[in-house]
Image: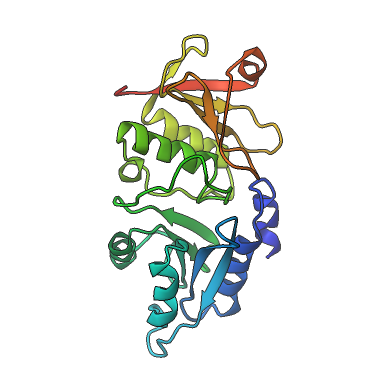
Length: 249
């Protein structure tokens, strides 16, 4: 597990994520499956491993439907998780179909190249913006901004950006490249509703994202806490790396 530990130190509480990788690497000869779920009345999260009941095809998984449905019907599932043992991390047509049919993200880990991929289906419906806990990947500053645009502007970035996972290397470059593909840079002194703000690394090595909301406040999701709103004052302005405006706003 050491090859990934440092990459996740900046992401908050990552024990369930590491638990999923341990499950993935326990047996690299067959696909592995599990789910990330809300726990402790949705104030925490965990990873639940499932046994693969398919004993014939190593590149396929079958699970206990009754166990899965208990979490699914109670709306406790944050994301699906499964491994690829012979292919790269890109989701297959079946992976996409399953995610779309359930309306759930699918986190894929390739035991072949030790990379990850987080696919959000186009029909994914985000939970309330300001009452969510911090969960790396699934409910962090990046997914907060993604969901903000969907809920406020009906902009579905799940159709534009396919992989929402943090890459093991050059994570900041990947984030910036995704932004400049769809946004134009703007002056931080002339911000308006919907503008995206990229902050310099401060408490971690990763850029932090925020967005200007309807009240001209900075809405964002800090590590380890619930989303918050702050005045975009001079102190906050000094921490800015760059600001962007979606090309169609």
